[in-house]
Image (cartoon, rainbow, N blue to C red):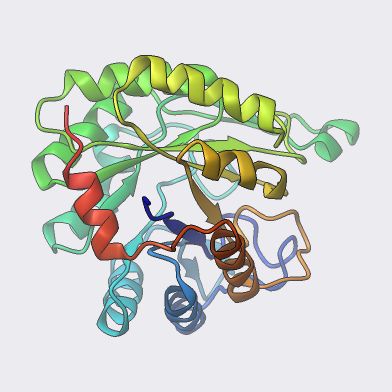
Length: 294
């Protein structure tokens, strides 16, 4: 039976105002990354924060320290975020080179196995923000930026981690992936939400729609369920039945989660074990992804 792989996203762009338990400091990210990997996560995703401002930023040295420290203790895939173009912590417009500058430095330093390359543009607006008269923001990923990221992935042989906010992200991501020779296979991460107005809420019928679309485009795709401000537990059973994988953590959980990353990771491990499946290791995940190609 195929193993199920688990990713833990430690923090995200929210700040502790919205997610009080999320780790901010380099030391806390290292500690929680090691703890979640020890519980069963084969992948750790994180954002680094500027200790002087309490806001996320793109800093090679901070990422380097966190990635090296976690990997020195655990065999686990650790990967950073990308500037959230249009948000309050990032500019609205970047050149492709500027957007991926830290990603490329990490790749050159042999510290990168996966990287965020989001294949599309959407509006990020919470239902509560809309009710309060806020417009949210346009999360922009141009075709030029996506293609540039995929070319970096081909050059340095890291896997694109695609966040699928809308069905069109999948179609564009697959087309662009196939246009870049030697690009490693992407990870399709279906993003659901209860609190934001993009895409689908976390209901099995909507997950099935994503699966049907992806399987019609790609042979043997690798995909997982995830979310932002979401409780994706209703998706677990159908996801595992259809051969998908899971992402949990304080980036994805509903705001003011009473559970921290370790508890969220343990809960997912328990679900996998109760299903009769096994939790896969990072080594098994690397082997599985390497067996899939264009």
